Length: 222
Image (tube, rainbow, N blue to C red; front, side):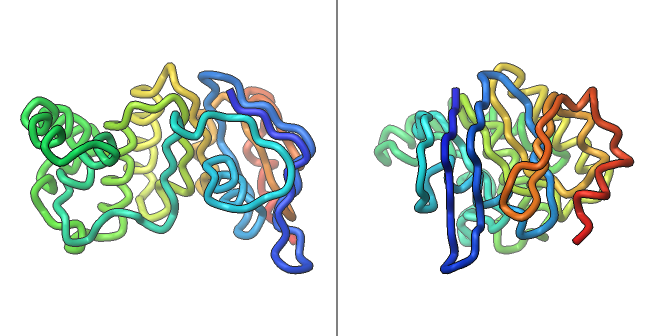
């Protein structure tokens, strides 16, 4: 599905990311953890093609969805419109217009699953940070891609809403590949594979079943 070889990113003289060899298989559910600056966001952005890098990444960018920490929602558009754009962004206005009535029930469904159905017709600029994060997740749920890359998608949510959001995402995308950078270690149990990053490098890559969550704190120490 995705293979990475000899990937390297430098910011001036500082190494930001170095990955010798990494393979991500179809349908895998991977959590990516590490403290701020460890290389998680850079990794996701390289896979999606947002950042220049040295090395080789084999993937089909057209089949990848990326949700970043910094919202790319359009503030002056409604929640519904922002979600619809996730699937129709590359299509003509008239084709999109003809599809809205057909697809609106799907928008209702994903908003209901994330407990924000009442936000559908509100403008994004009037939402809280946590609500905007759930709209981004709703858009990802609504999209039809093979691979989903998410960067800290629940950082502004409380524990209960974080767990609901991740569980909803993974259950709805059961046949898809999901790679999710997370900060809340209690969410690790929802995933199959864990990749831990430190100083721009992968320091652990293992099945979640083999991991003791209590030991994860060591990777956040300086």
